[in-house]
Length: 379
Ligand code: KG4
Ligand code: ZN
Image 1 (cartoon, rainbow, N blue to C red):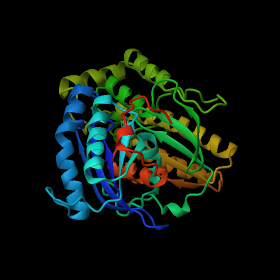
Image 2: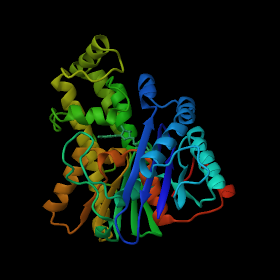
Image 3: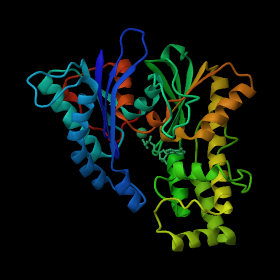
């Protein structure tokens, strides 16, 4: 079975073709991701109107490329491509961006007479774990924790979805049995990275930049709060951490100087200066550690309570090496018999493969007439 996956919930236009036959691992036939991120980097955050306009511009070339790469299919053609279904993100996300993908998918479904499977973007991040992505990580390093064949994922599983808009902890007992254990009460983990990056004059999105700077810093240098550390529930809160960093930028002269020097020396949102001060690296390492510590504490707490056999990560922040490595270390250190599954870094951020993958498992095709974008969609 071949599914065409289309993802346009935010600033990425992701279109992919995936194949799954019986119990064999899901195979990527093509995966094309175009992005308007560079335009938002200039403004320090996503401008929905620009994201939607770029989706319109990028949709057709991305679709043409994905079908050519995966099936050697060329437009125009009298025949539809050899696909069995189309999976489309219908929410949550930005309404303008979602509409571009949803309306395109509905048109293709009608013209080609192919079933249309509406997919919740969050389930896409979850099902990225079922894609067998061989090869290397984006940065050229060998992938130590990339997705393993899905046959090894056993239930119950604890799922941590950490993206720019979400920090959710789920209990997955089966493909049709998923419950939300908790979520963020304010900022999501990725949002915390991005907002703190803005305070420090780092380019948007700041998550990868903070992670890079943190490699040279001391994670114990600054004592930062671990919000909701002792709460017995599975909720998160990261706005207090952002406030703590804001206070530091006002009260710590060294930090204030670094920020002011950076804003004078390099344009505010340009790429990171490799000569960045040790102080900034220390602060980034401390911020990253605070976020990672809370995410891991809650995930392991849930894994123990629900006797999980697997922990699955998903979403852009799951690309964070510290999170992946420390969680792997702690599972081993506490001798927990839990398999850790993390998609390869390029499948953690938004893409069409994850939507097609979710399509295989949810497989609830409905008439294209009944598919509508839903920006507020929950689980
Ligand atoms: O899942 P995603 O691509 O888009 C949403 O659905 O939100 O996640 C984007 C988020 C951004 O906040 C970005 O800063 C964060 O993921 N991110 C990271 C890393 N790579 C991306 N955060 C921390 N460390 C990273 N390596
Ligand atoms: Zn996402």
